[in-house]
Length: 514
Image (cartoon, rainbow, N blue to C red; front, top):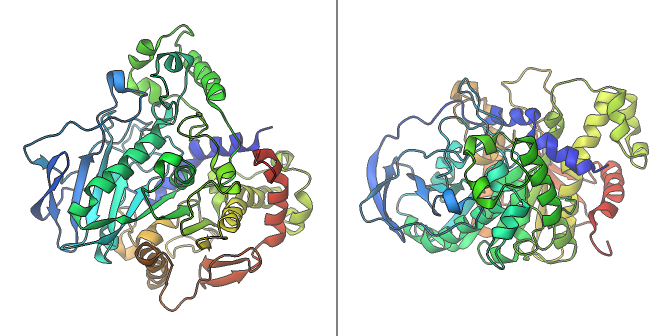
């Protein structure tokens, strides 16, 4: 059994709707403020000066991937001469949306379009050489959008934030024999969402100085699918030099190899289930409505196509094939929220490998629901985060965290921090689903701490979190920072359980000598 296929399914399934609790409930209100114009390489854009930050939205970083450009590497933007309005959000990339207009599993609602390769910039007024953070949103590689996230408090603290869109679902991670036959010689295939992220990073290199950012001080960061994308970018040779630091929030880290041939079979089967004949040509596939493709279920995400990606992120990390850059990586106490709210019975225990069960005596004694959820959280997020921190600790430092804080607005029955709960605290941005009246002094204290860590890391390459020390991770010291009710450094956190998960999982990742 490929246990990681089940994990990827959980990340893209209905359980991932919990992600939406941290993000937008409706479209952004119209922007208020004075117009401000910036000239970039493709033409002038007119954003909004909101006082504490300059905001530019819906800036295209690649040509619309439509028609003959669907399922091809991103192409250059066609330049414009008239000032382009950049005050309001653009559309989200095609994805399943809720009919009632509420946020979907990635927090997105509103219009969608294949013409979605755009980004949003939040910049401090009068910035010069400011650090840059490029955000890659989560949503299981199937949902979500960059416009959801407000970077005004990063800008307030001297950081330029860029939040990007990228192709999703069957439009973003898809292979099919017909597309392979039609591709140009040497052209990468399948990982179109990852290609979009690289194109956005190249846009940053060319243009961020116009917004006051330093193209030589770029931090890539993302959560869930965005964290997994961050690791994939680190494993992708063509992304080298486009960033100098990385933050991975709940981004997995143990990846089972999947090749282009594997993905072609999956894509062919998916199209057959959708009523597309096996004899369909590339032109036939490109003529399909985007909504039809967005509805196709699948375990989406970066894979080895042999050209863009030649190994998994796990393999690249184990083989020291990634850039030596400072890294923050971590997970949440309640990642099992991805399993949904159901109470798990004895059947759930059949998926737990026999060799890890002895490490969970206390959890097993509490019943199958507690047992299965603890194993899921450790295996999917906690164990991989610690392993990545250890593997990358030999050069530039890595820092490991554990987010356990539960906001004061939640009932006592919520005892663990769900998948994606940390986003509001790292961004110090409560969004439109958490009115200020629901934010307690303790909530703000945790946000102040975590946000300060992220900001200082972007500025200096080390998380200086006020008076709270956070030592770099070493396998021998095995220390992490817990962001919780009582934040602080923990040593040998869940060592017995994470050791067992690591010993059980690594042999199946084809790491080569590991």
